[in-house]
Image (cartoon, rainbow, N blue to C red):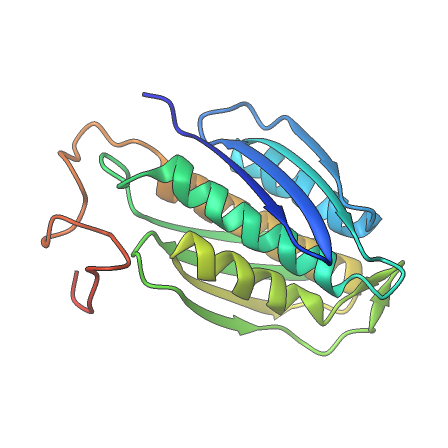
Length: 204
């Protein structure tokens, strides 16, 4: 079974191509024009065990917002395409990841219901050209198109680079756990028999 997704997204603000293989080896090729964001997406591929290719050209002369947002939207859609109906998966994943003084916790449910809870300390506004207020928006955008429930909490941290990177690493490990195929799971891991966003309601 191939679990691969490919999405092209073109607007007046950006052109995005994303390819993902959920059963890869963590090889990432990322180019968005925002170096720190590239670094974070590479962490997502590496620690998620996903083969990931991202090629984005955006209106960076304005700022990084459109580039980052559109990339995250395409990535979430590619992830959902690769996941399919989520049959045979563990569905739930969680991780607790330290990075020096920072500690991030993440839990994910491949629920079909987009929902984000995000909690991080106040940190400096910029890491290079990366606006740190975009971290929440990246996760919001991914959640919207990947149709997952995601909780991310930074338990401790002072250094902005560490705070953001710990979140991406925890996110990657939680996703890796959730998409893992479990031989004990028969069909879709839901008592309703579906994790489709069109059909999902609380209690699945």
